[in-house]
Image 1 (cartoon, helix red, strand yellow):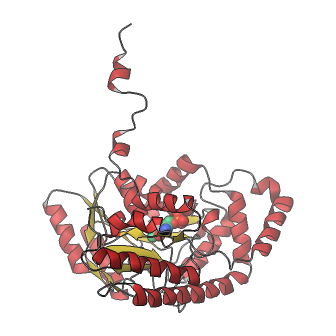
Image 2: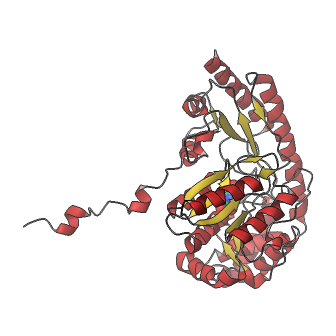
Image 3: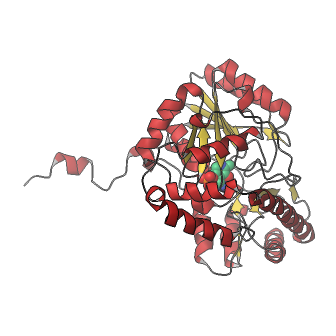
Length: 408
Ligand code: PMP
């Protein structure tokens, strides 16, 4: 029998073209390698330290939710999330000046899923997405999956430089491309640690409005400033074009997989439809457990303890790096969040050395995993929240030795 034209031209196990051309995440690979090995000190994963959570209280809440509300908690639910949680989300966003109606909020399985929904709704192949330089690898992977062209915008200590952004938007228009959106992590950015200044927030929102771009404001770290101070979000000054993304992963626990999305009003319905098609609804049980936590007073104290703890861990890291890293190593101190972005002297290739670092018991994220254009060989991201202070000191000493040997 002659082979069917269908099977010869399109073998069944061949993935779709857009999947084949997507990036394989270097961060994820390093993370997986680090997870498989026991005793590794990981500066690689952006995971919170969970040891301060009130586990017994959460266990009591979980027990009560199942025994008293089991037939609701374990059932399907509303595709945009339970109203009690959406009300808490509105209160949280109000801290940063966002005024929203709970009906506008869409609860998702983490903000990563929300980014996927928003990208699905807005990006056509070839559209240009602008992002910080460096920017969050997980978002870059989402935009690449929707076949966007990613353009990194130069920045400094105060985040993205508006004039550079405007210039790059004009260049894209002139090249016949469609500048579609600016993606930014304005608070304690992943991976750079910088904060977008108040003035630039307003300016960037204005440029997006004038140039006809959307703005994706991704804010998982806003409540994690070491001094507890918060900044006004971009959304209140550009509500018609801004998608605001929030997460409970960093301020509470990523294991519940809960985050949210606030879309521009005109796009709320398509986004709700996308959420429903993709996931039906976020876990009702997890939402009830989170709501019980947010109903009580303890989460504020827990968060305050985390801020102190994370500051102490960053201080330990910086102290140990100062002691052990080769001369010429630099970084900018973040005022909160999870990440220290480090630049090492020429002659050290962080991409090449990552496997040897893992052999010696330390994982980090090389800059090449963050940029989409092969840059970043002199840079690395160190997450300081999960390891203990002792591990941080030991890990930094191992890295210092490795990098010094590479220079010798
Ligand atoms: N945005 C940024 C900037 C992040 O750092 C992360 C997680 N590392 C996410 C979104 C996704 O977080 P989650 O899905 O756990 O809410």
